[in-house]
Length: 278
Ligand code: 8IG
Image (cartoon, rainbow, N blue to C red; front, side):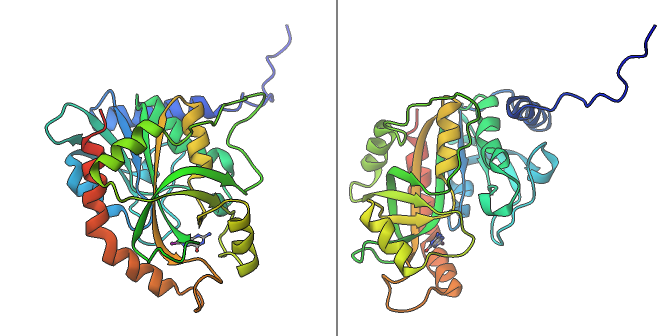
């Protein structure tokens, strides 16, 4: 009798298996078997977690399979389960994300969305800090993402997965955000790979092809969220005019200052929007 193939590689874990494993760790650690919605808090948005409800559980991100401590200073390395005010609904709040520029690959970028869906979430709010092309917008402006242009030259989907992205950024959820603040402008978010900011020529190109905002996140997550069957709302905090739009070079200090100034106001806005998300 031949020996079994002791040297055969273990079958690789698929992205869905890894997400299911992460979701079961979250369920065990939080005691919450089912989450209803998910939020990703990008640059500037961290304070919202305290306003949307009562935190029932906090888990260091690095202790959940497939998640890592954040690469960006100021992002919060925990995921929280938050019971919304006056509601039985529970939100999974990811205080940080994996960016494509970290070099962990696109599976790592999409993992948060696949995990959120595996915990039961059917809607996700993706937030970010970004640069803006519209000279009428001042730093601190919140913009609803109406659509995106993915300039990363990659997709979070693998194989013959032909997912429709018409209305990727849900009209229903944008309408609901407008009920909270009718003055919120909408824009097209252009994701560059980063981590460098754009050149002025790249920013001009982004405008010519229809972009209003430039950033380094969100589009790959939105696509993965849609594949996983979630409804997506995208909210951008414009912290700076994009390179070449502003007469002065981009300053990280200015970006941080705009974020800090905006933080309490946008936290309130996000909490009010989430409260309406049935
Ligand atoms: I905050 O101007 C922030 N993130 N790509 N460009 C890109 N990402 C950003 C920017 C910006 N500002």
